[in-house]
Image: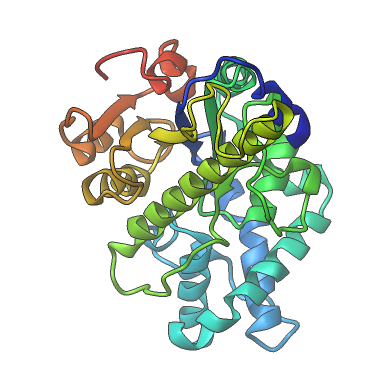
Length: 340
């Protein structure tokens, strides 16, 4: 898939400025509700891994929803959820658990990825409009006009299996991964992104880390997207016998991400994207946008209030109550619709 994608971008006329669109997963692309969500395979993976790695080695802990207040896991990252669970269930301090978090995440992936697809996504489905919207975006990706990836609190292996099993990967909208990706799970479903397994601050007492950890994931996804573009540029330069710094336009300017749009349903998604814009986390001159979708637990009006006003050339917030089912979603994400 990666080689084919690079070949598609190797033509003679591609813009040097690219948009990166990143998607949250749960509540944005897929949904599960009620007790089905609370006892999902992903939730069981937490209980299994924390009991196996940090507990007595055999007994799972209680599930996240049975241990934690909703604000401790809704919209959070898997790393912060695991640290909260370890403290409540086992009395372990976050600083003691943080060095072992990679073991916990690996154990979670082992558990989740060993399940058959039906069990892994039981009670879960793609939200209305998601698959058609992603197929439409896939046309833009194949044309070399945009990159798309995931920014999710899910650990990478679990996110990959969810996306493949639910049908998202097959849409072709998600760009291939950056160079050097090391996640061994679901290799045929590897995609560009920033994941819960990529960063964890370890701070579960500062509520702002719920969105600031996710902001770090957006920054990671952006760096990886730029690395992917640079790789494409070098491959194209070699193919056309130009210097390694010459792009398809032949002027020596490397292609780069100049606009990042994060799509998500939770307050943490909105606040993370806003932090990236206000703090300049994605680099000088990068415009940050957010499409807040009312398809999760938070009402659209509340998301709109959190986003605040737009700032020309800095921050482009939009809110869509119907999420990706809105007929304007694709054009809005691409920057072709004003307002929202």
